[in-house]
Length: 374
Length: 203
Image (tube, rainbow over all chains, first blue to last red; front, side, top):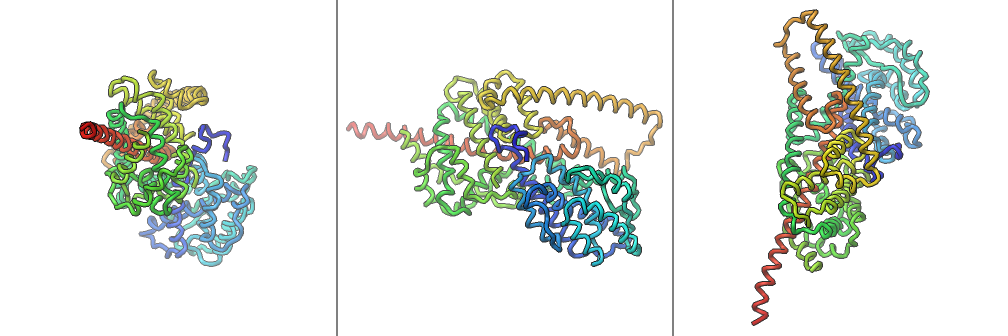
């Protein structure tokens, strides 16, 4: 969004990995939204906490699409046109992301805005058609009209007083008083529906929003770290896993650098250049799928526990193509991933299989290269 | 999506630049020194290719404090060297003042709690869970560069970012080490083959 503020000399070496995270959070929120679509049954008092929490995270989850769209509202593709269901918005959500490549802060801002927009989802959540109509409209309308809608929502909520969940919204007066902050970027207030039996003062609400944000992040981290099953609930255990993973990665780096140092004296790193580039010239020759597998494995998915091996689908035809590849390495390495449809999910997809670099393939390749150099 | 690609591309480029600049292959260095050089060049390459996150600046700062890596850092970062090391210095000051603030806050709050004599509720599961989580966040803060002064949410953000980039770094190093080992083996076998052939040819 702000290229001049990016510090990387590479120019675009910025928050590329944020797209995986955003893609993750999108998937995460999609799950939640699917929960919303089948309207949850009115929860009895005993399970109100559980249902309430799911609805709260639904509140958290649903609006980010709106939030991201607002983020991109300067973009022509960003601002949502009217569509009946939130489901329509999800596919369009992916479009703005590549254009603007949201950065670190905007992702955090995304979740914050999610909390802020939660009233819209709250109205849509578990509500019959009467509020169902305004809620999609509020989701899709641009920002200023949405500020009016909380007032309308409050009236509807008043009408539906017989709901099982006790709902209170914050003083809309505060909201309407603070409406004009200029710019479509930030709302000054948070509209949150309180669950039954929960305090509604600003502190606890803000705390709850904060806690939900932290939980959302923890879930993302759980997906990223392998060996962190979904069943491990509880912050401390997940943090344990994360710490172990980081430690093991750092130890691996040490070990590998030691190994490289041991091998080193006889190696010419200029030659290594061309080796890497030729190896990476694969996708030009090969179907994107196997190229994708190789690249994903070598670059994205090496598990901490070592790779599970899978036979390389097409080793043979790839080898001949190597030497026709031009040996300018930056181009190569970009070609390396061009054929690959770089899935942003790959960073956080622990279930994907891991191909390891086939040593047979590499040795024959290297022999060719060495012959050329000699 | 273009960005992971450009990151990896830049990462490899800087890594190789760093390795060539530190001249690990030709200089006579001890194993330790070579390993340090390789590791620092990998770290710098990763941080520099990533660009603008909190941990990247912290990493570059901590590496710039070491005397050995100055030349390496300069060669990789090029023009950005001054800007990066300067900004990191500033952020250190900011962090120091935050630390002072926190310390004073802690002292005040401890005074307050002593005055109130908080009832010992150590056995509540709630409190226990919270203390466990706090311990672990403290550990995590130490492990992530620049993480000590971050609060919970941004710490988790940084952790996510850092882990994904660490993974890429590990992959790169594995690739490189395999490549170099293979080339070394091949070179050896080629040499021995040639030696074996030579007497035959001579005959």
